[in-house]
Image (spheres, helix red, strand yellow):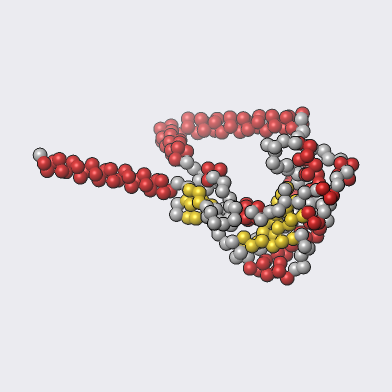
Length: 285
């Protein structure tokens, strides 16, 4: 009897230890935010996930990121749906295909109706903000705030001279411009070429420490910790913004006067719209 009790206790302890180990492994696999309190603002902050350290330079909670693509309940649903589909094909493949095609047709039709709804809504009430030349000319340059321009680059040093020309043409006081060229630490070629250039005084070169992930948003997060402006815009190195774009955006914010609106989207146009079929399609879109 004592031997049976001892055996039962060992089995119980073994199962308990197994469940505890599974819970610990599951907890370990969950994303976790980390931050180095000794650093400036959010620099060197990021997310731990599956044994990897992702430095994003932001204290944004991991739930608002794409670090975890599928959650457990989503995986379960996908597996169940896959099992139902396989079972249907095995039992009656003809009826299964009919049901599957009908479902896909319904989804496409629902998407078409939704797109039509958005088109009609846009045509009836446009969200476009019209800025007149008179409004632009009436601005007092001495009272304009500092505007930060982020330009994340990676192995694109050839286009920097043209970008500098485009930014220099912007109709905004140059002493109120804070232009950041965000270069990756391991992109030594671009760093070397940029250091040879005679950049305007309102340009500054910021070296983003080498870390995962290698993305433009991470570079912009790093630059944001060094930004001096009250307003900010992100340009690609090949962009050629209209001279009055910053002033139009500034006036748009003044017109909206809504603290919940923190971003405005300008129209995207192509200077080579008639070059080929692809550029024509982009322009039409």
